[in-house]
Amino acid sequence: MAICKLNDMPTALSGGQRLLGLDVGKKTIGLAISDAALVVASPLKILWRKKFTPDAEAMFALADAENVGGLVIGWPVNMDGSEGPRCDATRDFAYALLRMRDLPIAFQDERLSTQAVESAMLAADMTRARRAERRDALAAAWILQSALDRLDAMVEGGEKA
Image: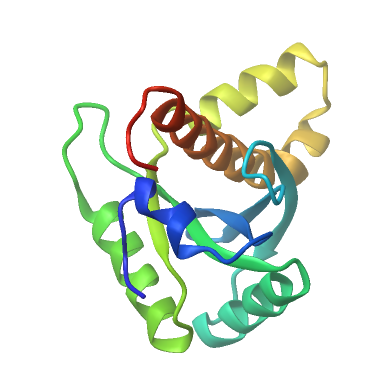
């Protein structure tokens, strides 16, 4: 499999497989998981980045345990929609994952994900420490939920999903 369009993801999955959402940062990787029906995303955990191979192995072990059949990675485009160095780094990360494991990967625009999550946590009156420990996993859930909502809209709109 390779990097694919989001609307190709459901046909790339076997029955009951779920999606793993990733918010890839320089220090952490936020992880979120979908349900088997591809409707709801839930924050899972944060991986503190060390080296690529052990990080990827830990992520794949989690993916195997959770019956994950595909990845949705946050696509860090600039606010004007242009691609910068962060997109290059994310693309390189995705291709490195593909060299280790043959899973379908789709990108999802992640603009404003961290700000949306931060606003929700502030509204919930979370402490600064609690926000810091949950931010990246919640951002991954926001990214994955956005992708799931797009998939649902494609199905409802009559587009091929």
